[in-house]
Length: 198
Image (tube, rainbow, N blue to C red; front, side, top):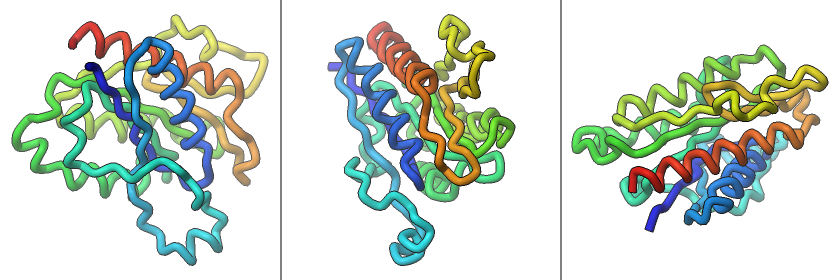
């Protein structure tokens, strides 16, 4: 049976919401999906002081389980135009998998959030994609057949490199319907590709 992992890191809940939408897209194609997160590196007292969303229900992923999936969709917010330390730390532990080539040929896709429209969405997506390419994964982007990313009537996320959302400088903007539709579209696309390669 084809299985897909949505692997994410979320400080304030925006990426968690996008991860759930991504999983909805996968399920819409009848494919099994699990949503898991990488471990938090910030001490709990500091995370609470800075209002991190600490009540996330997704279980913690391990690098050892990655080979069990046919596709891995990775999401994380930007940190100065690149992936955050929590996600980098997780992928830094996959050297053994890389040495064995265990992820070669699997489907990969990415998603992110930024505070502003020009806050590094595409560079963050590329910093996530780089890890997947080094593992020999096949990258699925968000094609322009998802018309939502060409909208000009509202502030919106979306890039040919992956699904995105904009959180606002204070984190008050939640993923829009269009942002979530982009995540569902990409999740469904990854599921269809994984089925074709199964």
